[in-house]
Length: 217
Image 1 (cartoon, rainbow, N blue to C red):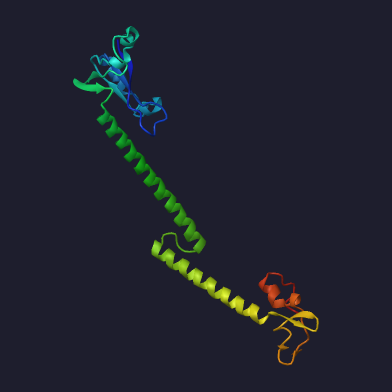
Image 2 (tube, rainbow, N blue to C red):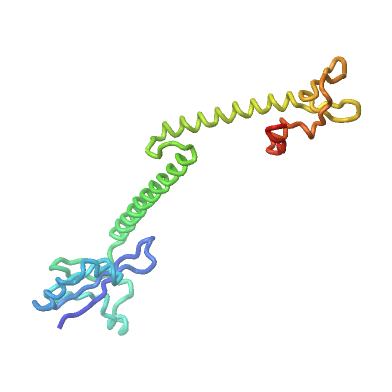
């Protein structure tokens, strides 16, 4: 009669539970044909790393608890498990566990790299969308577009600063007026235009988004 056994594997740093292999032994021809028709992802669906099937008997001493019950063997003893006629030490040696742990670390590292590349692609798409350029552009073009955008921003900021300097406040006969709109004459302390109070300067209102003046004014 066929048997089902669980062969636990060394637990890696990323495992949320001990990994295992499902071992089916003493399999006759009819059952072997049935197993051959199992879905390819059967191991994944049951949470196993792999499903191993053997016509003969595979003894896994780690599954035999009688020795522990009798106290005849220490809990940290090592055994040899025969799989496909090849002896396998169980539990694995420290060196084998270290190799397995390093393999898991490299696997996680590759996963992290793929995840970072995906994040980078998403960031690139967001940046090109913000810059209004083709998302297929390379990073050199993206940097060039960003530099151009910054230059335009700096030039606009300098132009706005010059306009604000022209429409600066000045004290005149007890009130604060706009220098440019009032055509203030500093030497004569007079205005060539009717004095415009600083808070009513339409230019500054427009710069600040406060303009209420209609085009007909």
